[in-house]
Picture 1: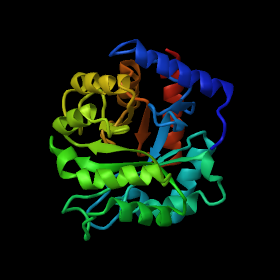
Picture 2: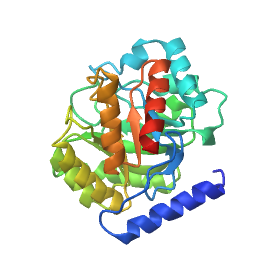
Picture 3: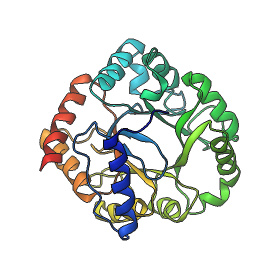
Length: 295
């Protein structure tokens, strides 16, 4: 792992002091959308904005809009993101994007980018059911062509007792973390109850959460979700926002900017993942965020 430069060290120190200050700290936003930000207490530094690869993902075939565009277009998209300063990439078994990211980033030193992946454990969604997190991580590393994965999440927890029913997989992920094959663990929640459980679980390092200003494709009212996420950040968990643009439902520049502004001003996320499908979408959002972060 590269040594932190002075700016990154100071940023990490400030975040730690803010967390210790109280239950709802006014954590400073990054100065630019591609600033490397600390993801809670994980030790992982990632760009504030990341590229998601799961638009319209699933359907039982390990695919998404990002796989359907083909390797050439995917590589162009991922390389444009990386060349624009984005080093955070979200993939998942459900999306089938592991080998696509592997080929897109060939030649890029591993320490230069951050990978977040997710285990689909549910009985429906894929033709096979994953029951062993250890086997899943081993397969993911091969598909991605890497020695380690920065973040591995249990994908789509919905029940309030998920920390009981998925305990065996959680323990396996903890063991993989101890061996250095993954750096942080957590969950992508798809209900408010599951997110509340994650908030109280010391096992959860990272929470992937749906958040936008209109409550589109979310698990509760925007302010309600933001309050819970701020509490998780205050506890030192990394909160990664998703569905920032309502899974593509925000069609105007004004709607997208309003959502970015809401998420930033709420100070409820460490970073955000957006499912860009075209290079020009990346350019537009980075430009919007520059203005939002300066406001």
